[in-house]
Image 1 (cartoon, helix red, strand yellow):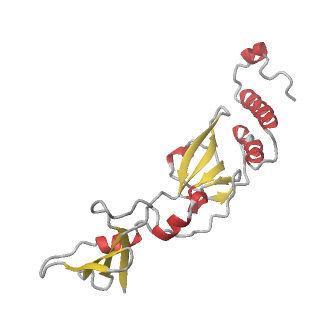
Image 2: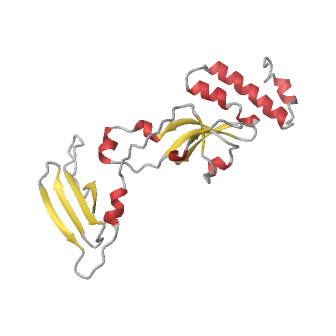
Image 3: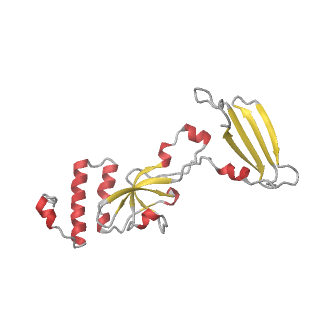
Amino acid sequence: MDAFHKEVAYMNEGSTNENGEVLRYKFLKQSLDNPDELYEIEYRGGGQIIGIDEYPPVGTSVPMHGILDFFDHLWFDFPTPFEKGDILWIPKTDDTPLKHSYGGFVLNKMSTWDTNEFFRKNGDSDDMDASVYLADSLGGVFREVVGNYMDFEYYEGPFKVNEQFFYALSSYLKGKIGEDALLRLYRERLLEVAIADDIEIASWEEDGRYEGLI
C-alpha cells in the first residue's frame, strides 16, 4: 500500500499564471509497507513530467514526511448536520473556553459552511472548529471559537439561569424573532440572573433598565 501526497510546487515564480491556474505540481509516493521507499515526481499542470527522484541514498533512513504529508491538507466531507442557532455542547470537554460554560452553547458558524470547490479539489488545513456563543456567570454572552465539531451534540439541558437566554438567541439566529424581541428577552434574563445571584439592583431601578419588563 502506498501513500500519495500532492502539492503545488511553489518553488519559484511561474508556478501559477496570471489567472491563478496551477502550472506545476509535485507528487510524493511513500510505501506504507516499506517507508524507506520514497519517490518524488514533479510535473507541469498539463501533465508533462518534469522529473522523478528516488530517496533516500543507499544506507540512509528516510523521514516519514511522505506518509504524514499524505494526511495534511486533505479535505474530508464529514457530515455536519448542525445549523446556525442550534443549542449544542461537547460532553466532558477539556476545551478551555467551554470550561467557563455551565453546559451548552449556541452555534454561530462552522468552518465547513464556507467550503468551496477549491478546497474540495486541493484540500485545506483549517482546524475543525466552530464559532459559538457562550454565557458567563453574570448572564453576559460572548463569542468564542471552539472545536472539535465532530464532538458536538445537541444540548437539551439542564439550563441554569444564565443560560435561559439561549432559547431567545437561538430563535434570533434562526430568524424566528427580531432584534427588539431579542433585546427585551435578554434584559429579562439579566434581571433574573441578578435576582438569582442576589446582585444589587438599585442602580437598575434608578436608570429604568428593567422598566417595562414582565
